[in-house]
Length: 95
Image 1 (cartoon, rainbow, N blue to C red):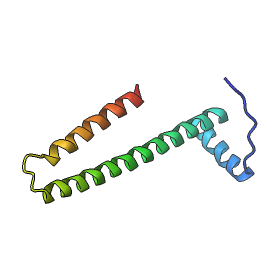
Image 2 (cartoon, rainbow, N blue to C red):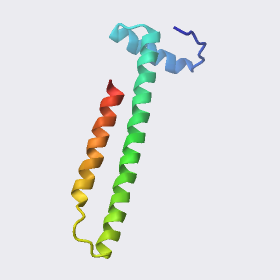
Image 3 (cartoon, one colour):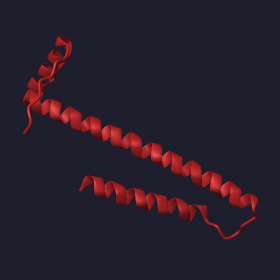
């Protein structure tokens, strides 16, 4: 395991120490947990942004197809494909 030197404000260190004492964990474990949770949050934000863009793209495509009077396109099926691929992506991240 690598070691790092970290400078943080005294007030923040006091908060960390109070919490880690209540939870009976070491300071380094607290910081490891915090960083892992932060990375999870970043991944979720990125995932939801990609999901939002995908739905916007589907909406634009749907509107374009409707304007062309194409009858055989199923937007619900397209959304299901996106959901399935997202589920696969989540499972990969969790394994």
